[in-house]
Length: 152
Image: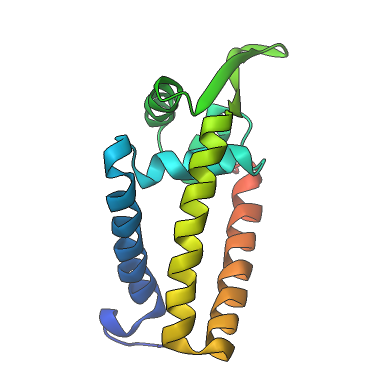
């Protein structure tokens, strides 16, 4: 871990650069569908049970609710997501991933697995496993933190 280093030597910057590169690779595969990695992220959050409503997605992705409405509109137009009024709160919509949405997530999961295999091939099995474990911990902590309501 770098301390008092130049920006390019920090883990945060390296993860940002690598993440941007990977997002570009996903965007390229999604291009013909008219969707973006944000669409895919929103869909995955609903399918995995991390988000039930548009507000949940906005909080988890740290984006404006109006952006999530647009994402949900587009996902619904592509028949990847369904929205129904929440019977407990008529102002909210409960989101459900359709079978087509599940198929797209499976396809993108296969792409992600192929990219993972490339990473392991570059790093070696041991280091690749350590990277996977570290990223799993970081992701788990991020989701745990984002599930908590923001302090007022």
